Amino acid sequence: MVRKKSTAAKARTRKRAYERKKTQNRVSRSWRKLLLIVKAVNKFLRFRRCDIAFACSTSDLNSSQSNKIFLNNVSFVQKDIEFTYVNKTDATNHLEDLNVVQAIIKSLISKVCRLDYKRKRRLEIRKKKDSSNTTILKDTIVLKSTRQSSWFHKKYSQDNLFRKRESERVTAIFQKKYTNNSNFREKEKILSRTHGLEKYRKYVTFRQEKIQRSKTYILNKYHNNMEFRNTHKGNVLGKYNSNERTRMRMILQALNSYKKSYSPMMQKQRRLYNQYRRVLNKLFRKVNREGPDCICIVCRLSLFRNQVIPYVEEKYIKTNMTVETKERIESYSNKSLPTEKEWICKTCSHKIKKGQMPSRSLLNKLKITLYENCKLNIRKIIE
Image (tube, rainbow, N blue to C red; front, side, top):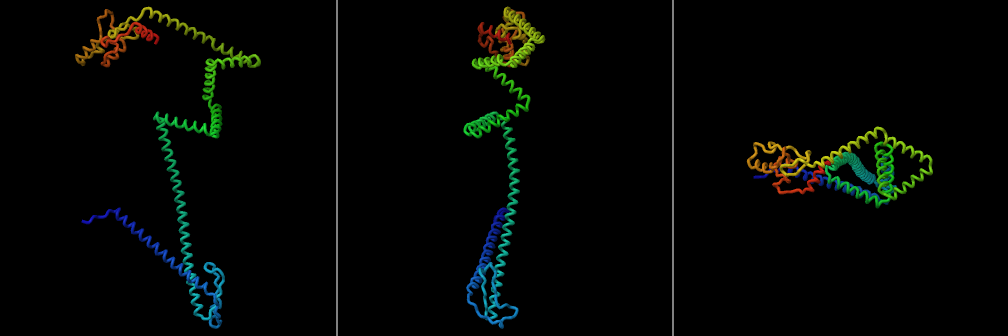
């Protein structure tokens, strides 16, 4: 059984046959051109070798034909050559040969011109294609760059590791370039100054933030650095004593600040604040004198009222529980203490609701000393 050829194989064979035929035609054309050129060259050389002049009677030639033949064609003759013939047949033969040579040269020139025109036309077509391709390439490059930028912004905003890595890379490159390249350093300084000045003049919020930041920086430096504080005091005192305008301005600033800080509203607020502080101190002392009264039935810690909640058995023991879990939860609570009301701390309650053993329960055999207990209670009261 013969295997059928696929369409792709058939197309391949047709393509190869077409290419073979094309090469053969090209070779045959080139050989034809070469033969024509050889013929023309032979004729031309034969005419150049005719240096002997033959005497020719004017009676033998017709009146229509001229006595002398001048070759002034520069394309195949370098100088004027004069031929005189005795016989009419020789002259006609030479004229025919000349016509043949001219026809061959004309055909060659026309072919060359046609090929040159084709070459120029192909070049123009190629240029047009290149220009269209460049526009298409520009569009594709723009699309690619937009896609890349959107991907980069998305990843930079979402991925913390990528953001950190990119920021470190950019800072390292910038620092290296800033330290090594002096021109780049000077340009960056000028750009930063101009940008900062424009932003300071244009945006009010940025200006206020900058002023506030400078004030805080100076205050911190004033309080922390002794030398800066002494020099600043000396400068201020020198200006205060030497210049009258600065002295009056400083006096006015002091008066305004005093009026603002000691206004009736501010005095009232300060009085209320001091009263509130006194009440809190009294309550704190009273609570410390009385001590924690509520005792947790699970961990036996004596706690304050805000640290405990009333113990309700139905919250922890449900009807759908197994007998083992019920017994385990009941074992956590120790009801042997003679108290009016049963309390449970919030941590133990939270653990029991989760179905876990409280970490501070007596069954867990963990104990807290008296000092730690008091310390814990004091911290809770302060909070």
